[in-house]
Amino acid sequence: MPFEELTTTAFHEQVLTGTTTSADLVSWYLQRIADIDSAGPRIGSVVTVNPLALAEAEALDAAFAATGKLQGPLHGVPVLIKDQAETAGIPTSFGSALFADYVPERDATVVTRLREAGAIVLAKTTMCDFAAGWFSFSSRSDHTKNPYALDREAGGSSAGTGAALTANLGLVGVGEDTGGSVRVPGSFANLFGLRPTTGLVSRTGFSPLVHFQDTPGPMGRTVGDVAVLLDAMVGFDPADPFTAVAARIPGRQGSYVASLEGATLAGARVGVLTDAFGSLPESEAVSALVLAATDELRAAGADVHDLELPHLQDWIEQTAFYATQSKEDITAFLAARPAAPVRSLDEIFTSGVFHPLTDLLSTAAAGPRVAADAPDYHRMRVRQEEFRRALLHAMATADVDVLVFPTVQVPPPTRQELADRRWSAETFPTNTVIASQSGLPAMTVPVGMTDDGLPVGMDVVGRPLAEPQLLRFALAWEQHARPRRPPVLPHAVSEAPAAATAGAR
Image 1 (tube, one colour):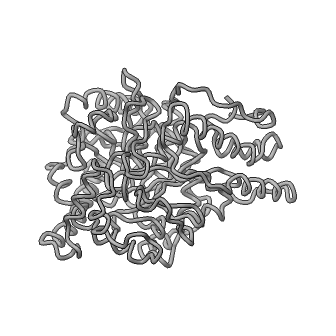
Image 2 (spheres, one colour):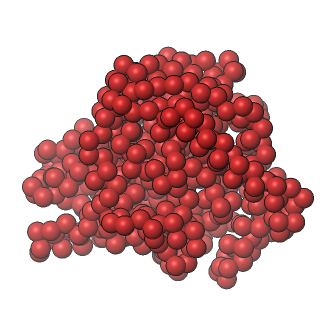
Image 3 (spheres, one colour):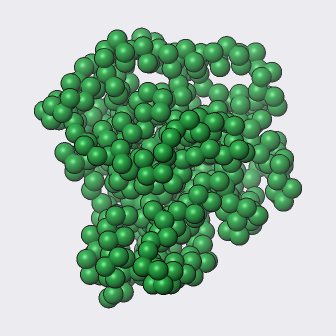
């Protein structure tokens, strides 16, 4: 299978040896999107294909032919971008049917940086309305299917990026994580997905949900791909004050890829947060796989300890801002865009144009116009700091560098369960909020498949700015466990061009 499971490194090796080109790869992905996303199983992960993707690939191929040099660390790499990020000249809907024809005049900062690194925006991917939930359904694109089980949920809100990546519809992908929107679909799609420390990556040009938790994040089939993408994304942005954090980090370019050197599980100090394991019947298979992974860590030489955080659920409930902050943040974002078809969350809610199962959007619409006017606002902000301190204190007391637990306590639910309202945004048992609401970086890593073939992820949480450590740990786990299992899709795709087949891996 020519380009399936291709990595950035392998692709560049092929370009340098003349066995393939960026145009070959883009053509293959475009055909595969047509075969799998728009036809065949109809995953429904892509909203809009970049009409200039092939022309941009051909221009990069011409530049390489003239110079013999790659035009950056992402030269010719087709990237899938969550439709939460503005892209100049390409419609950006934020998951909303109201914005189906909205075309931004400028790129989000992250998109600019990816282009500067040589990447090609291949396509925009699905998400729920304004990223308000854990699931894929939206007024713009309805449901996104899970490639491992087409009747199952793909996870949100970066549903399309996760489903498309695991189905090999792009090489790497960008999601966005407020409460877990990189890691829920990462877990459900058997991928690696990183939530960086807030402020490492600019949020400029991304529609917000809770601005002090929002962060774009890289997603990939391998840790190496996540690292190379993160290198291109990180950096100070004068338009985003939170990125002052990134200005403190010297030698950024290439530093995350370089940090992968020497990855090993031997001597890794790991804390298993036992309070984060589910007690529901659906949780048994997930817990078993994550606990088996911790046994594997011990067998590989890691120093693994069980630890507890008393009243974990209380911490989570007392630090959740989605109902308090989102209305102000979404409205401020829309009000700053004269070409937007609506200018506030109130207008969206009044229009009725949002998916009926996007219950968090309704909750946010009932929130205060000014978040700080909410009676518990300041107490909750303080509680987030106290939550972070409690987690870091538990890690220090146990002398561990990372915490691990199930990314989500249950497997991907069926779409029928969601239609029957088995879960809501408030009740869905995702552990991704632990890192998001405490301001810590986290990475979901695949740990196996349930007996019925559903992927399970393990969240790995570190200290602030510990991304190099998280990536090394994830790579060591990847090399030890080889957990990636591509989905078997019920439709054969077109063959790649003959010139593209040699040496692909």
